[in-house]
Amino acid sequence: MDGLTWFLYAATGLATLVLLLKVLYLRPRLNLPPGPKPWPIIGNFNLIGSLPHRSIHDLSKIYGPLMQVKFGSFPVVVASSVEIAKQFLKTHDIIFSGRPQTAAGKYTTYNYSDITWSQYGPYWRQARKICIMELFSSKRLESYEYIRVEETLALLNGLYTTSGKPVSVKDHLSDVSLNVISRIVFGKKYSNEDESKTSIVTPNEFKKMLDELFLLNGVLNIGDWIPWTGFMDFQGYVKRMKVLSKKFDRFLEHVIDEHNEKRVAVKDWTPKDMVDVLLQLADDPDLEVKLTRTSVKAFSQDIIAGGTESSAVTVEWAISELLKHPNIFEKATEELDRVIGRERWVEEKDMPKLPYIEAVMKETMRLHPVAPMLVPRRAREDCKIAGYDIPAGTLALVSVWTIGRDPTLWDNPEAFYPERFIGKSIDVKGNDFELLPFGAGRRMCPGYALGLKVIQSTLANLLHGFSWRLPENMKPEDLNMEEIFGLSTPKKYPLDAVAEPRLPVHLYHGGSVFDEGSLNFT
Ligand code: HEM
Image 1 (cartoon, rainbow, N blue to C red):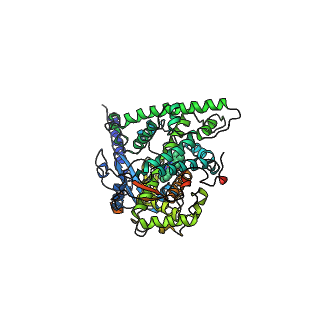
Image 2 (spheres, rainbow, N blue to C red; image 1 turned 45 degrees about the vertical axis):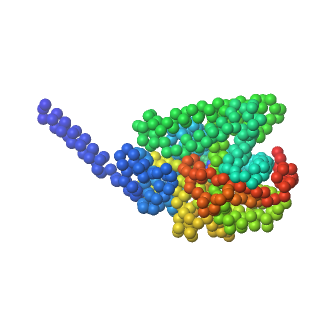
Image 3 (cartoon, protein in one colour; image 1 turned 90 degrees about the vertical axis):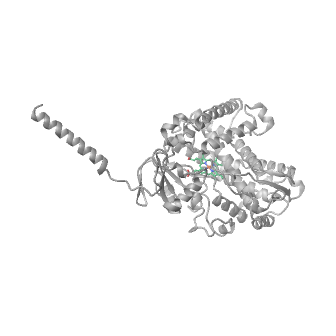
């Protein structure tokens, strides 16, 4: 080797070494939010218990309103104050409008073709436009009022027949929610025995499929966060997801075929249910992004899933809290007697005249939010919040569970006290960051108006139509108020209670119970 060659080798080696040192040591150090020290591979999973929202709540007490934990190798930032939630969902909303790519999104929602798990981009933006302009417009929601009335009435009549006996409140509530949402989305319900004979899924199978969907979308699937364990599926979730997605697909294919047959057969066909609307849009050549048959199936399934459990869970919590606090129950009933009287049921148009019932609903959503950390978001770009760096790809959670219990925002935060909302303008529609049961910003729940209508009118009528008590020998203080974690956050022990009618008997037997003249039976 001559001198020059030797020199060139040495210079190249030195340059490489300098470059390597630069990359390793001179890279600007990120100022990451504080948080517990992660373990290799598992990150902070050792600190997350079976109620992740409570574990995260406890950690935020130590590390502050913006903290970072690790799910396996994935960094996760958590907002636990109004100020930081505003940064995530308002100031930097466009950055935090991504969603993580989980196995549940891949296998149960047609490879992220639904609304909830689709990435930020033209496809998702168009989906939201369809929600606002078509599916959840106030005109369309109004046109479905007769469905909500009929199904609420069926609930009230059903409870009348079981009066005096303990019933599982949640079972009744889930049936109403599912019936309402099925009729709105599919044009008919699948929990009706007669109809099921012509359908390809029995009512019980359909309910089981939905339960499985909630469970699999709510679980902490380790394979999502520790990548090399994904293919092993040692919790068995991915296998279950694949089985479930086949069942849903078979069912949704059948639903779409039925709708298409009707479209061809009926003269001057106009869309009635949401599947009709989506199929019509799928035919539109001018749509910015093509809506495929798969999109129609994914959207329909998403809306059924989003709309069923959430309302039922909230009303079950509300009635449990009222049974635990008889004086508050009395005040709610007193308002209904005063405003509605005992000769009719409560209608949707009565709601603005029932501020105490509204306060009970808000107080329930403060203490028992269906999604205690909202639906996980993902930072699409690098971002700086409160002086801390949040690199692109970081998962972002907003602990509305913690915000709802923040003693700097709420007096005596653990107490169920609806009066705190009386005379206050705090709403649940994503404007007031103290109370965010539906989230806020671009990815806020698009079904909130429908959810509120269903919750308010079922709750008000259940309180108006029945005196409720706990089963024999059970005292309010015995009522267990623990929750379980999942896609919704229901009671760990479902509420059993006894309902006794408190209105004239004829009101429980159908007929002119609601003021039908005011309803739009289209
Ligand atoms: C008590 C009732 C309900 C509650 C508490 C609730 C709550 C939520 C929350 C917290 C989110 C996530 C927001 C975020 O990421 O910031 C969400 C998203 C969503 N909700 Fe709801 N929801 C309810 C009812 C409904 C109903 C009735 C529907 C449809 C019929 C629905 C459909 C959806 C969909 C499709 C998304 C995903 C939105 C997106 O990612 O763009 N929800 N909901």
